[in-house]
Image (cartoon, rainbow, N blue to C red; front, top):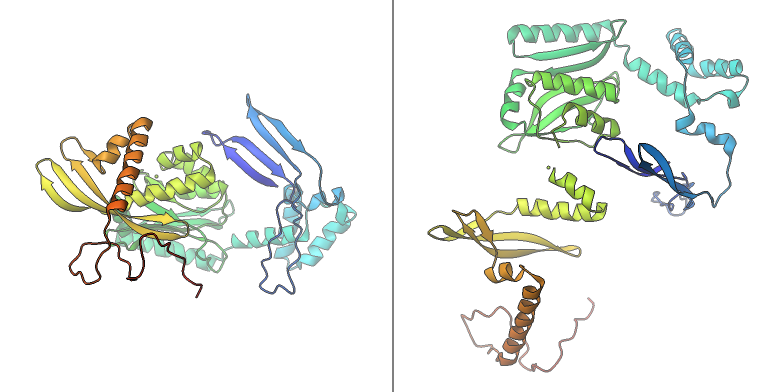
Length: 413
């Protein structure tokens, strides 16, 4: 199985790690620990690494030792080795239309091949194929009614857009439509939209594919929708090209989706400019863990809301509040930011800005800060508990405590 892979700018594989399917440690997913689900994971370390060099994939690391028994005869059960010819598909289609059950159709294929071991597919593959084939067999009533509805909508408003993709024998495969309101909303709120086909399916099992954005009231708005027969590269390409045609050829700036590799390839081809580039650069420089950390901090900076405190000529002083993650907790931190309107130069506290200019200045500032803290601590006088209106930010509610007595941790509740 593919444990790790990396693609280049041309979307071709640059690096890949192929490991044993039993690699990794078993995780108990069952809530009942008395009867855990069986697992095949044995933390097997067998794997190979391959790197593209001069246009060819070359093996860099090979570790062929497994920590479990092997069954080469069962390799035909792997998904990559299971294939169905067009002849087999035609037989399955014919038998299904004739009302023959799947177990009977598969049994005839087994007899014709001379045994189960001679078939490069399983009965489950046959059932999956027939399920997908049935999705394309829309009745004339449903497809005809939908076509009539689209024609009626276009007659009422020529801004209504619809497309019906038909197979060679005239059966409905894919549908896309967008009303005038959706097309007008895209002109204002089409910078970013989400696309997901996991919401629901219609009575024929066709995934519903909505294009959703957010308006200025933070409400979800529909920018078009479709029903698709399959989730492959060809179908997604048709859907996106149709949607782009509907929106006058204006691509979005960004697309949010959680689809697979097919979706990623289609977006790169149909919307080559629709990809928050700074993150792509970060992803090339950092590991995945560090990239997520930087990504979170970048989003935190973008979400900060400054508050104007004072204004003196071209200089403006803002109060900026931010949330900082400390281990598993989050605390609120306030900053004073000075902004020069003419130079568009923003600084946090001046001393920090200058000290960050070099390592020598930073070390010098750090030593002086520590010296100031020690000096203030030595000169600090105990506060009287009878004082009122004090600006002290720290008080001790124990009149018997002396400055030299250590403060102990509290008891466990």
